[in-house]
Image (cartoon, rainbow, N blue to C red; front, top):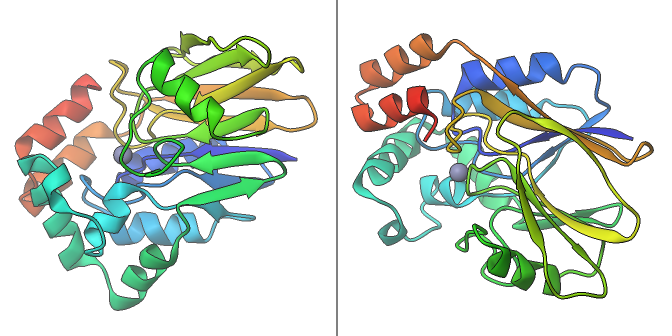
Length: 245
Ligand code: ZN
């Protein structure tokens, strides 16, 4: 099976379309949460994601915040502004859809979680090998896909040694999964990358070839920024898209 890996779309339709154009050959999709929040097209992004074939989707903290199911004290003032704006755009049906998304899924032995394991899955950020080790301890399989940090990277470790290595995928790249190692892989953010590369980040997971390929593509950033400014969303949020931080 060949899966498209998408995460942290954040209502950025232009970035999502650019990613999906590259993913047209995949058979199914794994979405790691935060479809909405920050960006100007929450409903259009939701419709696009929901129509993807074979979709397995988990919820992100911004998705829950936009439907009033997550404490806004966790958000900075810019994010909070965007959450409140997003909440006003969503239909009752869209709100129900987001509210019903699971916070964790397992697909053929691979775990999907937005933030980290163990609980609470939506709040914790994996940004160090120590964070990653805690997550490795909390699942039994060889592979877990995460989102949330908007950093395109992976951690890997041997089963027998409690230590792991962190590898950045700033430019993208192809990872061959070794049978004697375990992996925690973040395909990065489609709609708001924060690893210094402003290009949309996403992945292709081939279960037969045992590979994960990360791609970075440019998208129509000026259009997104214009929409954000017209919607009255904070300038800081549209400006950081250009810098990719
Ligand atoms: Zn996010």
